[in-house]
Image 1: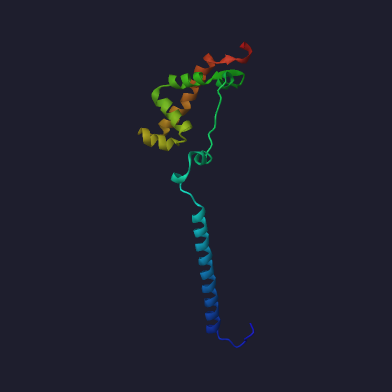
Image 2: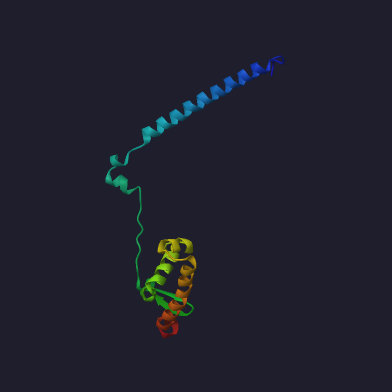
Length: 146
């Protein structure tokens, strides 16, 4: 500072003026940026079908016979076998398994939805594994059988 004898009030006023000027210029910049962005923006309804198709992409999947099988612990399983195994479970156990593993629900959430205690949901879910194991062991193909 060149003026050593400025009062505290004068210093605050000078700083206040500086802040107001900075905010004014920043607001001006923000308004300019918004105006420039609005000039470049196009609504979806104004797009041609060709332009619209460039905004997204779709995945294509091919399902070969090899994709229908998966191998675990020397056994070959098909998606249909797994679906049949789930369908063979009693309905209350199947619901607990599906809600837990496919809908990412906790035991407490499942219990609230099914109106049963949480421990019942946990028992149904864990006991389902034994039933699924027995079902799949009897029907899975050994890799060596191919």
